[in-house]
Image (cartoon, rainbow, N blue to C red; front, side, top):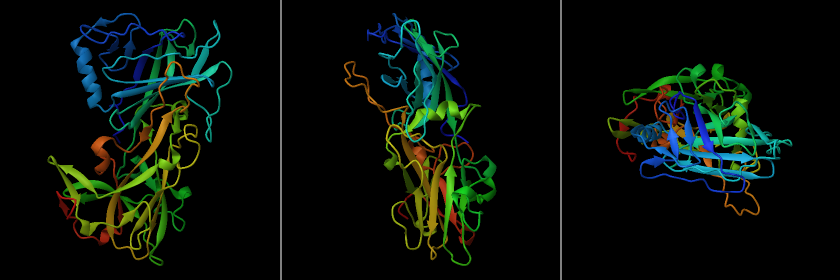
Length: 409
């Protein structure tokens, strides 16, 4: 499993808090001083309120290393049920978080939770708030990890008050991917769950998957069921995202809220694989007709069936993205691939009203099976960068698959 990963480490992130009255700290981000410093092991990031520290070669190098590992963009949010503040930045930029709700003097607000509620976001109890950190890609906003508050001013507390100057987030990085061994796969189906092939039947035991050779390379291929009587079948499937390291899912997933439920989508792709610096495509003669919008008379309709309804910026994302494949009775043997995306936000999309401090709007992130151009390559089942899931209908009836460097073949 792979793709959504940092590499497997937990990240500790320290963020400077600007004072309640909105006073901007002395930001230095040029010359020989910096206001943000990354630790050598990549486990922490510190923001300095006053002045800066000498710039080191290691600071520059680590920023590049972090970018190559996939993540280069961050968003943090604090919400007490009435007031909200958020900030975003990319590696190499200065960071400032303004007007963090701190509660009554001497009491503060406890930000131990990242969110609550499923159908809608539940307002935090008095004296409590929600805080979360999203980490991912700047270019395509693929979400790679979620963080929760675990320390304030270097101490193991989650209460922010008038004396708080820094906070630390512990981050759980995503891990997901297909596998030719069903027990190790994030994607599972109900293909062996006759006669219903329903969502309740989705699981490793009912997943029909094989290692399938294309262009001399093996890929996990998931079978669509073939009904020997009706020849038509509708089968459910599910894609579940895990975490790289042991983490309590209930600590992190409540922060992930649907940004635009009706925009969750499936994308059908011609199977593609990068080989020797070139992209190779499965020739059209071997493809099964597939669509995400209208059922082909002789192919397969693919639909995402959850994370598609609810209240934007409030309804909780459901981990375990579900799909339905409907194959026509006259469909010919063939293969195709697909990927998906679900737009999400951190905790809430609310903005202060009025908003004199100019708090930024919520960023729309995306839960995907891969990022960048890898989203269009086949998942090789072996921690590769590809995210497309390979599907097949009666693949045993196909001759040796041929590939071409042109998608028009």
